Image (tube, rainbow, N blue to C red; front, side):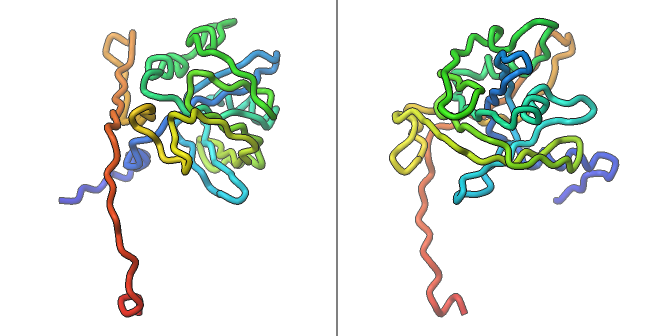
Length: 209
C-alpha cells in the first residue's frame, strides 16, 4: 500500500533519496588555516568537462565550508572509506572558539596540486575543484564546480574506475539521530560487501519500433 507524506511534513520527502555517499570537503579559512567537514549531497553533473554539484546549508546558519568557498572558489572533495566513519562524524560536530576540526580528527594533510585547500591522505580519492557558479534555491546553496585535478589510490579502483571492494569500502550513510542524553549521535551506515553483476541485452530493431 502506498502512503502519502502529509503536506506539513513534505520536507521529509528528500530522505526518500537515502542512502547517500558522504564526502569530506576541505577548504581554506580566512586566516589560511585548513577546514574540513562532511557532506552528503555531492553528485557529478558533467563528464566533458568534468563537473560536480555540491549542496551546502546556507540558512538558518550558513555552513563554514560555504563561506570559505564563496570567498576562495576552491575546495577539495575527499572520498573516505569505512575505516574513517568515526572521524567523519566527529568533523560534523560544531567546534568551540579557536578549535580546528583537522586537529580534532587527526586527519593527515596532503598538498593539492592546483588549489590551496589540502587533500586528506587517509581518503581513497581526491577531486580538486573550482566553483563555476553558486545559486541559492532554498535552505541550501548549490555549488557548480569544475574538477581540475583528480588523484586516487590504485588499489581502490580498477583502470576503468570500478571500485575494488576487496580494498575499498566506500562510506554509504543511511540515517542518524541523537540519543536522549544528548551526549552522542547514532549513525547508521551500509556495509558494502561486493558487486551484483547483470547483463542486459540491447533491444532489437523490431522491439524499438
